[in-house]
Every structure is written in C-alpha cells, then in structure tokens.
Image (cartoon, rainbow, N blue to C red; front, side, top):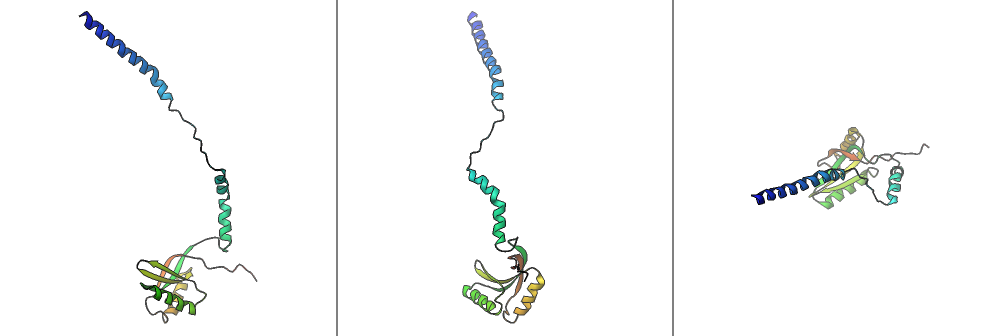
Length: 157
C-alpha cells in the first residue's frame, strides 16, 4: 500500500511539473506571433519604369495623332467564306473602287471575313453598304464592334 501511495505522488508531481511548464511557456508562445516587417527586395529600375509609364503611354498615342487606340463603331462585311483566295480577291476588288477605305481580313476557323471601313455611325456604314450592293451582290452586313478611329487631319492650313 505504501508503494501505491508513493506511485501516485510521483505521478502527481510529474503532472504538476508539466502543468507548471505549460503555464510558464504558453504566454511566451503567444507573444511569438506579433506583427513583423516585410522587406521587399527589387530592382530599382522597376520604380523608374512605373514612374515613366504615364509618359510612355502618352508618347505612343501621340505618334498616331489620336489620344485613343480603339473606339466602338461599325464596319461593312463584304465577304464571308472558307476560301482564302476568294477573300483576297474580294478585298482587291473593293480596294480598286475605294482605295481610301481600310479593309480587314479575319480568320475564324474555318471561315474568312473581309470587312471594310471604320465608321463612327451606322448611317455612314449603311451608305457604303448601299453603294456596294452592285459590286458584292452576296451578303453584305453591318458589323458593330471596336474600330480603329479615322485619322484626323491635324493641319489647319
């Protein structure tokens, strides 16, 4: 019986020591999670590039004479088909009659599309569409979307 009592007192003393150390070190562990300081190491040229970005954007658009790259408008689709040669032929026929109007060929598998013009209003596109009904009797459509703005004449002579 004496051995049993000494066994339990030994166990209680071990448990007491464990509780003592837990109570002692638990606050220390909670203080280890304080806010720290993050240090970012980067090339200093990145800061200069970020500082020059607005000026670079202005200079690239100043060369075209427009402050905007694309706007929404209308184009007339003059060809739609799967033949590449027929698309280039339609573009060439259109350019013979209207050399001042820009044309665009796009390929969306398996078809080619030839679109003409960069019109801000639908009325301008309809005017060209009515002129083209004789030359391109097939399907002529007015397509709305992003266009390249027409080049403005900056000279005031």
